[in-house]
Length: 316
DNA sequence: TATAAAGCCTATCCCATGCA
DNA sequence: TGCATGGGATAGGCTTTATA
Image (cartoon, rainbow, N blue to C red):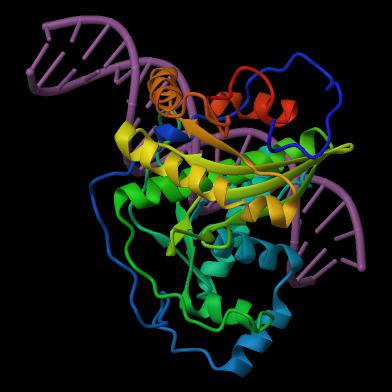
């Protein structure tokens, strides 16, 4: 096993799958008004001065700021996802959803966030959730406290695939957060893109590894490290194998092991068992007799994998 | 195959309640 | 008294299923 710092018999408890099927998120074809490039939220508000932003910042509650930071971190979030990340203290989940809606509506009225006007389908049926993103004013407000990130992030209208993938990655982040909350585990590190990217070189050529997520979970004396790849069954197995080769190259570089002592387990999270079987066959064929760096799981199996610390028969 | 109905999910309105 | 929060009700819109 490569990703675990210490080893000991793990507890085994019956678990019921609770993960939502994020891979079923679907983007509607119908479009919408792309947001204005200028900082003019609804109502034609002019660009806010730094002083105005500071006054606004002073008026915001801790939960408002948490919601802003969550949206900034994940780029796009649905209302329900904001609720699951930020509004966890309320009596019921429906009350939490209403609280989240009120908070997001207020932040939108302040011009700090906005929604994409296209909506995606629900997990099973029903109308789609609103998808929130940080406005230019919101970015500037958060930068009042963050001197590191000086560059303006330019808004671009996401493609359907990019949006579905970004929301799926956010969903995995949230599920990891919820799993750690549920099992009193510590989520010691959660790096989205591009924070989780790694640079290395092979034969003098500079290369980069671009996982979707990097996470460290701590359970008792165990510390597990993960590279996570969210697959929506849109890429050919050849492309997946090509990416897996990069992980092997990076493994051989020894950089990660030198830094942290272990190499993270790379987990491919796929939409269904057919895709899982398909990828397993290709990865096993391509990397026979090489270190087992990968696991291929469906979204429902994430909970089991995290609790087992990457042990079991999911590796390939 | 096209259409209607049913079921499901999300957002929002409105009112009640609790607290400073 | 005003504000924040909780909860019921409802509208809108999507998927699935039944029916002509």
